[in-house]
Length: 303
Ligand SMILES: Nc1ncnc2c1ncn2[C@@H]1O[C@H](COP(=O)(O)OP(=O)(O)OP(=O)(O)O)[C@@H](O)[C@H]1O
Ligand SMILES: [Mg+2]
Picture 1: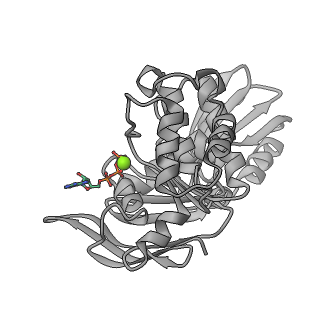
Picture 2: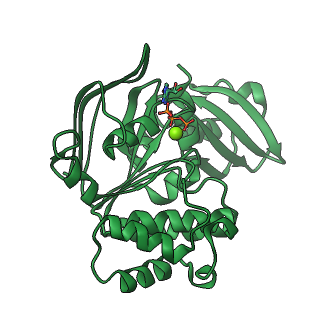
């Protein structure tokens, strides 16, 4: 077990940022940590990286207690904080040497060269951090998180503000890192979670509302609304289609293609097929849209 969180509560004065949160993350897993603004994501990450103490509960990283064995935790964790604070007046290599020094990294020059290559900083490596674009600063943030070869990476919104090309590159970089290391990342971009994460933890107002395999969550019946697209060979009518059990609305999008808005805990495609048979229509296409993570997120966090 790489990360184990047991009944963590965090109070900032009167305000409860985390309420009795528990979860586990296995090794070599990429976990997406999702939640609306102010849900408590950064707070949880700061506790796991020994930046702030929890009010109640226990947290372990690689088996080490974040309060009692914080030095061991810090050796095993690479952390990219929210807003990625960097020393803008330092050169990239100088900064990485400084961070590597804090971690007593051996063969530091070679390690820096490796980090620069892994994070794609070669072309910019002679620059001061202050002269770098946002995406390249983010790469420096990743390089400093990786320099001591930690087993666990905690990345707080690693891809905010990146252009689509950089986004794709950083995503691939994280997927590659995730093959060997445990990665926990927070993001507001749902496609990112779909593309990168094996597991999703959704947090709302300091409480966990979902913790599941990404695909299981998408196929879960928690949110019973979905869309069916159907094409017939001849015309049909909205009123007739709305008679199919589970169909709450029908829109004629093009020629004889219909979008059916469905509310049902089961797959009603057989009923649509039966409707066609009974109405003397041939089915040319019948498609159930996979639930989007975004809809599940909205459903779980609007409460
Ligand atoms: N240092 C602090 N002092 C007081 N309250 C704080 C402090 N840090 C965070 N909070 C509060 O705790 C709650 C959780 O904040 P947190 O930053 O963990 O949310 P988040 O999920 O990371 O949000 P975002 O998506 O906006 O980054 C918020 O209501 C926030 O205002
Ligand atoms: Mg945050």
